[in-house]
Image (cartoon, rainbow, N blue to C red; front, side):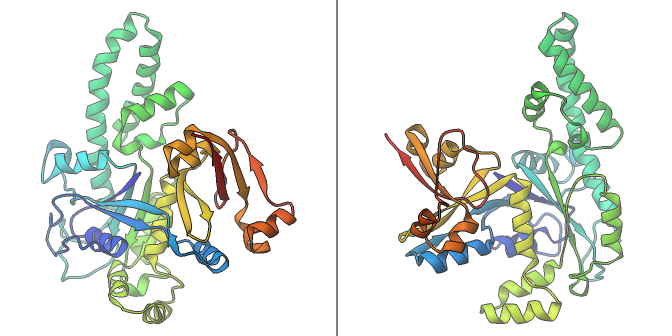
Length: 364
């Protein structure tokens, strides 16, 4: 599962990517410095891991991760191949969610491709290009499905009805994600269409350091604009985040954050939000060899969770032994959880909860 960072050139995408991933994507004050998409495998900050490490004292600790992709800046006309349009659209199509970075700071030394700072216009530029590309794909699909629908083919008629609704939405300059599938068939079709504007989105307002805590007038404009989109807005000073990553010690970073009025780096907030946007959650395995956070889809069953460790675990699944994270921390060990009756044995139908501490029994 990958989240792609998108935005116009020079809004801070590559600098943000560097902060998130420790990979050093080229970052420069001109458009298209990121030609190939860079992928960073980023640890998901989780304070629960520290507590489990403290209790279990393992030999090693392995955090959950999320893939973040830095994609070249998009410009007007991308849907027709302008700039790096086709490449951009292909890269974003391969991502499962979108992190849309908007410039919300004034700085005469950093060029804006459209001449002045206006996050509303910038958002609309990106949205329109993505909507135009989706519209092109929807109309191609409609050409094919219309003929079959006229012959009375029920599946084709279902597809046509959904495509007509999506087309109407896109023609109103709205994104496909606001079209709600009416039944399971439409849900499957929506997934199969792979529309760019159907992907979940998170907005990152890149502000100056002084606005990192409470935002500014540009952030207010963005929040007002997206209030009906069911999308989260995160305020983050990418420049300050870059400065934080340059500091050597944890103590230095904490002093810097305190001076800014922040309790943790904005990058940590963003990574967790991206993880949630991808509909991911975490379960833990906790033993003296390793404490590890495993990533699963929300709603995954116990065998599916076991399969993340190894496919044999899923194939030969017998049962899962489960302790809720809160109980593990409260009682301090697996043995004490058993004594307190907080140790559960679950079968194939069990839906894993975020934070479950699990052990699997299987037979190959």
